View (cartoon, rainbow, N blue to C red):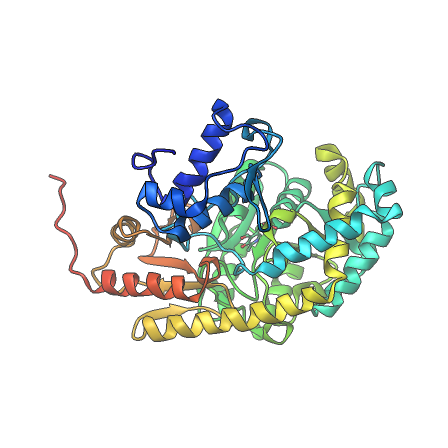
Length: 460
Ligand SMILES: Cc1ncc(COP(=O)(O)O)c(C=O)c1O
């Protein structure tokens, strides 16, 4: 009979942890049966449901197994030797973390992963490939297969112009490290994806912020920058800026390409933040194939943990990029690429994407309802919302206030390029909520916090 009253966090987790501790200390031996749930519930003063959840959590962590009609038994191996444990970033059950840009959770993701792993484990070709070195660009059949899948998602990429990367972030770093020398200038929207800012810093590049409005990057501002000092490369997320959700207008795409040609600049187009094809503009890799590198990844369509993406580049750059990739890690493990190929081969993947599109639209509608009257910027099927705060509300104070109430969002600070002042705004990642009810709880808290008067400062 464990004591759990001093263990922090939810009761069911405390029960699971107590089981793990008892196995580690030898109090519970392998094959020993756990007490009946009703008896434990009475002894601990909790409901039977809580004990059931605690046992299920211990099973999930690999410490015990339930046998139908018989009870729950300690596994042969103790927790110290069991690999794994709690999953994900979730640290506290009560926190609603809307600070990370994630696709909405759905059991189909784990199911698809499980089915793909099973298929992979019996594929002689995949197993043979998984233990061998392969080309740094990725094997031909992997690239051809991925190009076919991307075509279904509305991205027409030539397999020969693709490199397989370990996700979108890797594609960005590889492109910047290969194309630009330390000290060279790269431009981006004044608010942009923080991973691109870090990649530029790692490559010792100078970064310049270009002003933007509701139609995306301002071409007048870019033109003025080019007249002063043309950047070597412009990084953009044209369909859906992260964090603002803004889409670069068609007219500006044309102007951008004309400027890029005039000043001989590379374009790094980031399409990782997924939108259905009909909501995307004309890709820059189509408008200016000779100077556009395009980054895509499975992170926002399948799962972030897969760490797999593609980098499309003009043919003249492929050898240099492949050499860069080889110098970093020789190649992306073919095992992961095969896993992705087996994953997308399942009909459930289409079902998952269709569900996700609807789900994000429903979540965006909830935002419209609960934050009506506030200044919001987002795409109808986007996974993020950019909330410009009303006069008098400061982002840092709001974030702290929300944090105290168990809701996490992100201020503009990490998205700022250079040293320009951060606007008073926050990014809310609606996809990250466990379900719509959790999102609603967070939105109610956000709305109430926005309505509260500011706190008097304690600084003198
Ligand atoms: C715009 C953008 N690019 C790239 C990435 C990184 O993608 P990956 O997780 O595949 O490295 C993200 C992740 O949020 C993103 O929002």
